[in-house]
Length: 302
Image 1 (cartoon, one colour):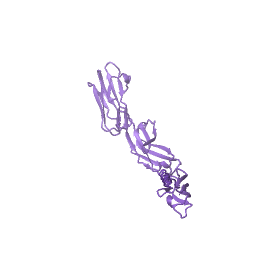
Image 2 (cartoon, rainbow, N blue to C red):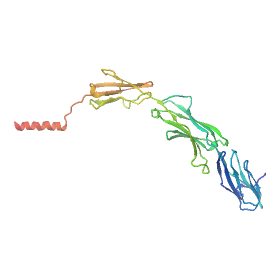
Image 3 (cartoon, helix red, strand yellow):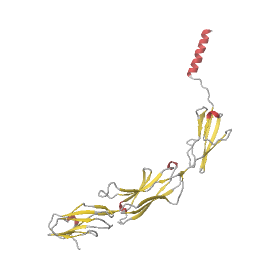
């Protein structure tokens, strides 16, 4: 069929003017005219409507759409002008069968400061030109990737993300999400499919927040050498009369002096020096006042 005429000048109105439909779904679109004609119809690879006379509205219907690159158009043969057509903008979509996250060439705990590659596999999704793959750590968006492919049929897509975890990432959850943004005519909210979370364990060596601490002997004051590390550290103390593997000691049980605690795991060690000082008795205001009053009383008696 040879069709002529500019689409913008063709006396046809489509309702809706754009269609987004799930693969295997149903669709119905009206084509209406207000001019006299010798026949109008729908051309499509599914559900074509033969040329019809004496009607001003015809409907294209498909109950089970299975054409990925379908291009339906309504045409008309006006009495006084040449045949023309209006093509229906049409998008057939399919959500992914699965979204999967993994690490590339690595298993087990990650080491602090080293670089690792995460991979997100999105299986059997269409059309990828409307696909966005998003990376998250917890609820924080890290990065997103879009695609320019104009392929209508389902594709598999793989995207990667480089990370360099630190100790704050121990126990963090990474995940990826595939989002189809099909515009205002598409499903709302946007169709999203997410991977299961990837739980990250990070190994890191002990590191104290400060290297020295001064302690005044007191029953309630402790020498606390506890430090975060993974794997969990062991503790040793220097200058003790008896060995101890406890990270905490009572200051009241120690003589004044310097005590060095070392926390060690398979990645390294870190030491901290505790300076223990005796409780120097300082006269308080009330003590001084009492002594003064006693001295005055003695002078008066004398």
